[in-house]
Length: 407
Image 1 (tube, rainbow, N blue to C red):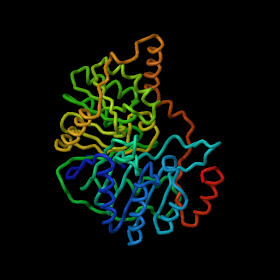
Image 2: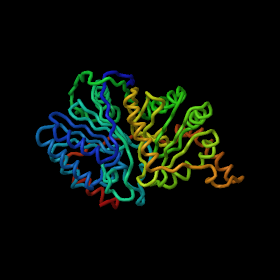
Image 3: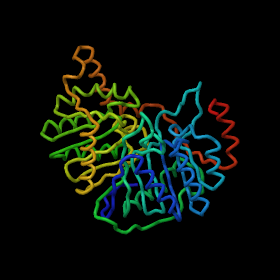
Image 4: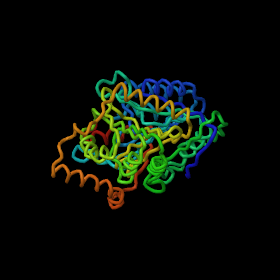
């Protein structure tokens, strides 16, 4: 599917799980024809159970419900939890499930990292928010700061079209996962938007290319908030180049990361960026999980793609790009509030003292990022599969879980 910019859309920013789950659950409760949900993580916690209940209620009143979860991110889902869905009539699919080896998960790479929810073909949600308690205020010390968008208008037709064809190449099931519901959404606003995806076949660099074009065109301001920041050489170079030509460039990154190794790697890039005039803010208190950006006063993006090797070179991702002054102003205001309330500025004086060893490690990191996309192409790769779980599969799956120590 070729992405294109479409006018006439309504795009609403949603910040954090408290607002996101309430709105998504409300629309699922109102659904009359179809609910489609793709997510990296679905946990059996407060949020996950609430989603479970609403999907069961929807399918029981005749709504077609299709759920696709990632085999790595949602591995902890139990057999009874899934069986309740499939027995009620939910079409439940797992992207690339793989057994553990010596207790270790083997499906680390090429994950389904997208987060898409579609209701009745007229409303879509896209962003970085997973279905778990980690995205709400009482999620404890791992509570996430994150963003999504609620979309209406012609862009939703494009997302629905994508959802119908997304897994056609890897499933042998002749029964279509998504109904032939083909809404023609009228113009419901004035916003111009496009839906871009990343996969390992035809759209390897689409999201990265949109970032590069927008950064190169920037004249006044760039604000990028990204949880896992380890971009490729081209992005890194263009971010610094923008600052060097006088653009105000601010990066909002994790200050208290859930994956310390990621921050340890990212900070190796701080010297290079700060020397070029980039301002780096680290977000504390609530762990940054967002993947958003605003550039100048009329370009913004919200989605699932981090700026790291996994998202840019391996995972299945999706982002919505928006060209609209009003939306950009809203997202910019929220990011400025995040900076003021929860971020600290990284000063060059606070970085570790430069040594030959540190310089050598930084050099190696820089050139790793430069060549990583090419190296990925040499990595052994299997063809991912999409496993559809039927009600009669429940006992078999339980035996498999017990066999591999996952009961």
